[in-house]
Amino acid sequence: MSGFSAEWLALREPADHHARNRALVAELRSVFAGRDTAAIIDLGCGTGSNLRALAASLPRRQSWRLVDRDPALLGAARERLSAWADASEAGAELHLRKGGCDIAVCFVEADLAQGVALLLGDGGVDLVTAAALFDLVSASWIGSFAREVAAAGAAFYTALTYDGADGWSPPHPADAAMLAGFHAHQRRDKGFGPAAGPRATELLEAALRAEGYDVRSAVSPWRLGRGDAALMRELAHGTAAAVRETGTVAESTIRDWLDARLGAAAYEIGHRDFLALPPR
Image (cartoon, rainbow, N blue to C red):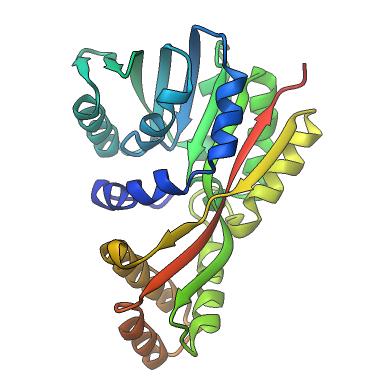
């Protein structure tokens, strides 16, 4: 899978946390209500944003395994989680105290393209989670993933899966061509086979329903405005670079579009959050 820098992940984290569907997070909280402990595995963890977003909604004592293929991001996760916590104790396992929660964190370097069977195979996982991951993986990987989660008997929650919705303001004549080019780039192999892109949530739903899971999804769009100018600029540059790689849009059109987008007033990009609960 293509790498992401710690700086990019830090830039997008406030928008990610604001966009999460609160009703679905509340439902996840209710699943674990009355429990004192939870064991969680976070796939493609980056710098630990998903843990920071979810810790307050999970039981008082939490054990997290943060999984990423990039050792630099795992190192950044350790640093940022330590800074985020009310108190921390370093070691092979990081121990955090935050808002009344006791959180033990271990860091696992692994390539998710090889599947998650080995990560889940030892049992004892209550929740499998991820954020901004599943639009990058393939349909066949999603099918295997669903079977492996079901074999573990774990609940599953993921946030911020791209759904294809995209709207810049003010509009530009090249918006449709640029979006089509971006989608063509997104469907390329990111290390897992041809990427699912905007179909990812639909594929997750079908795969987990086939395993008997109770599933539901809800929208979680980014709604960006003037206060998000730095993030919008990075998104515009990233879109232009991706479309340029496809060769589907003339360079002059890309440059004109990018010039306009660097001063955009607003940008909305669609995501969906997803929760799946194992059969009782």
